Length: 293
Image (cartoon, rainbow, N blue to C red; front, side, top):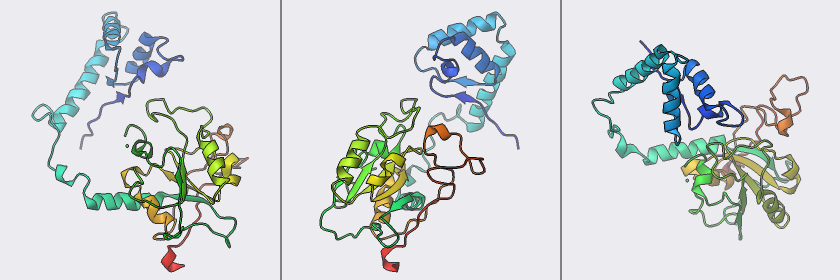
């Protein structure tokens, strides 16, 4: 079996070869194409790219054979996919999009991936799971009712279906998260996160739910929290977060990597001579569903 493939560079990726970006554009696409990139995503300044590439090919800076090879791979993949015969999307499975079975599976995945980091003062004074019938519950934080933040990247989870629960819901806010706008050199929680944590957790018992596509620096804020969990990006089936907070299911998630204290520790891995992380590889507190307690 022959594997068909082509190499595509993402949005403006080619010009970010240099620092600062686009500092030497002709150099960037020369080494990029020679390195094996077949298709280059150029969103805005495509005429500059086309003119520059054409000039380099005419001067044999980039051999025509490399261009031919890239075009051959692109065409081969399109032929195998049948795009010339039927260029539109195959709708044979469209009726299954968002069906209940798939949503239930996604909801289960959310429940099983949630990471419990802190739960009350001690094993004798646990805060989670929360009782469903408690009198008052407060939801706070920029990510509590924003589908885009909860899906991450370029998409929009909502907890609106649940009218009552005491939760502080927040993560680092970077709009949008994708296409370099979410880049961070320190990976700390930006405002209004820390202020909300201290204001809410200073007034009531609070559970902090971190919604993030990556680990963030948490240690300075831990003493203020009664409970802390990482929900990652729960997506459209964020109801799985509610399932596990309110007695129905237990926490089982474990870290598949090491969570650093600060970015100064990066890279950090099990076996490092000075391994002293915020959370070690495999960490994850567990709870049992209420009916089994």
